[in-house]
Length: 211
Image 1 (tube, one colour):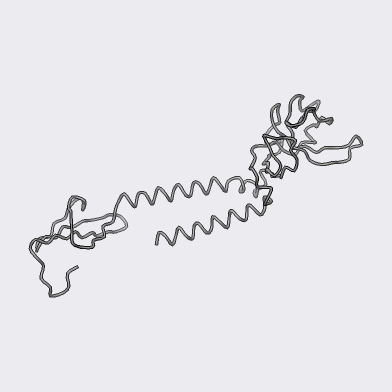
Image 2 (cartoon, one colour; image 1 turned 120 degrees about the vertical axis):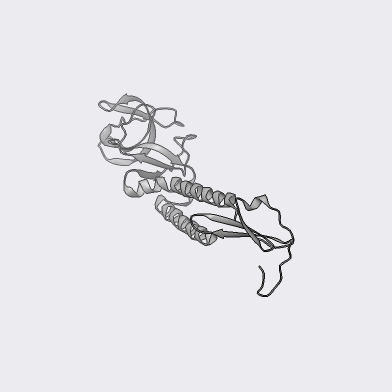
């Protein structure tokens, strides 16, 4: 930048960028002549520290921001679904479904009213004694049967099917997907809070970076 009262050399060349929220205008200053140009990249300048706003750089920032939002949304979607009550999450404690589902994995399931159980599905059902007393909840795979007469279920790692044949009233969920290892260190509620906190920190850092 020229100081007041200074003299400009006739062979000097300066690019001046005027940037607004909607457009960018580049002027080429040579001596006392000022000319608007299409792209500042058409000129090569040396011997000065010139900051030129790059359209490519801005586009990359926009793309990176969009990708970041999409990744964050995808990461939070399962936990938003859990918080809304549309699905349920449980930590698997045994290895009866290994290797498909290992101890410490979290299974996310929806009610049988939202997704009808069928052969091949992993379902969460209430195990009961012969007198009807509840024992525990099990996550095993349906290998035969139907909703009317009852399903034959079996853990993938078990050699024989379960004795009980659960009906629809015993099935609390049909497993949609699993989240590996999470249950070993966190319960679903704590994980949700951790992800929300991490997402908030990411937004703050991204905002300061843009500034």
